[in-house]
Image (cartoon, rainbow, N blue to C red):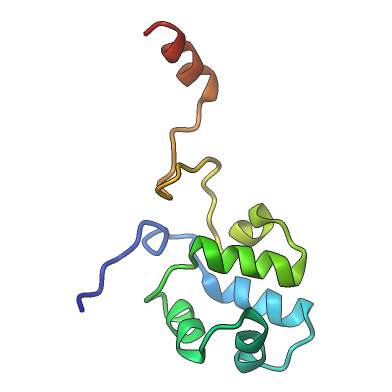
Length: 107
């Protein structure tokens, strides 16, 4: 299987280690294995996220939100995702909503 780089993984600010380390500290866990148990994922998943071979997906973010009570926005910020808007396919939208609304009215 070929390694496909995800948009998020390619961002310079992307640092999943900060997110994982913050969760471990906030939840007073000892290590990644304890975090895996809480998130109900196998250790290879966390390892791949730490080594930037696997992006933090939406289902993982939701699970992190459920166990930590941090908002999705806070979790995204912790991992360095500075995008402000998203489409259903996970790609960022352009940032100016007023321009988009004006353009849609004139169609």
